[in-house]
Length: 295
Image (cartoon, rainbow, N blue to C red; front, side, top):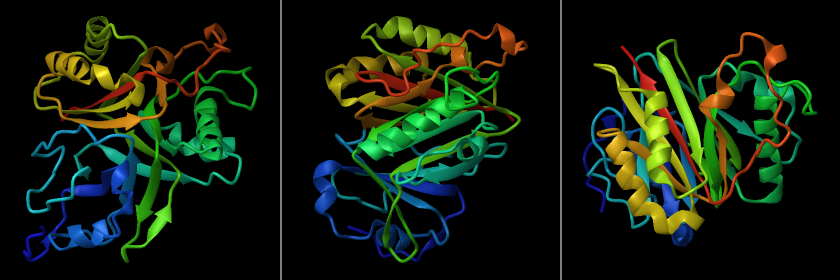
């Protein structure tokens, strides 16, 4: 049920992602229209992600996530309002799966501190996303020259991704990237390929460090559906090592990641060891990204 309140100006968000459980695909309602009854979201990009299982992002209020009680979405759908946080710039990039991704298309992503990459599971989308990851690592089509500086990366494959315009029309957006930039923004990412959660989260928390006083911090989690049985244990330890850190959680069919150890700046490119066995797309893994903004 949607409360018929006068629309409130949506001033805290830069764009919106609504995540939908796969069985809800038959829903014909315009989510943008529903949300517009409560919020004025004109010209706010509105993305819809279809996931394998109900999203596990909690309803967290405050500056990071706004999931209004006034909007009672049907089972399996969650609204994520990305905020306008001083010092943080978020940009979006869409890629056409029909054409091969070129290095110049990936160039704008290289200046970011972190990149979230989402793609559909079809072969063209997987190919396009793999090429994006490749060009984040390497300067050309071959694994010959690795980049001395590259952003951290997290993300995964979803059942379907699309964009909803202001008229409620659905526009395919099969490969999309969101970048996070800012002078006072630090990004940490890592991927867990095992069930040894304690060791993994200890390492990730040590790399990210304690949250500075007055800083904003949130996380992204892309967890393979093959790890569904570990959900409770994994999130319990995440909350232990990252208390009070809100997170955006997705179930995915494959995971992307450029860990901290691969994204650090190198003073001498000649000393960079080229890893010819880079995994562009991982499976049965959990990809994490921690975003921290200091003020």
